[in-house]
Length: 98
Image (cartoon, rainbow, N blue to C red; front, side, top):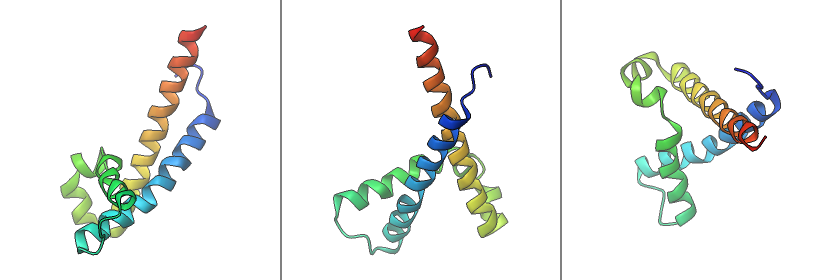
């Protein structure tokens, strides 16, 4: 991976991690039936289904049998995945402008 920007990777990973917290809570509230009709929280609840990809979608049997630790480690891996994806997209845009 040529021209890898650590700062872009770290910042985007942190941003995805910060988005994951309210989306996880909103999805939890939606599952419990206590979310309500606020459009912002409904959006966060739906965003969780995007942010839980790829580990929770592809490895669901491993995630559910591993307990809470594996569940949250999987979410952290997803944040790293989206951080890497964002960094690569920014790198691609930067090199195509040159």
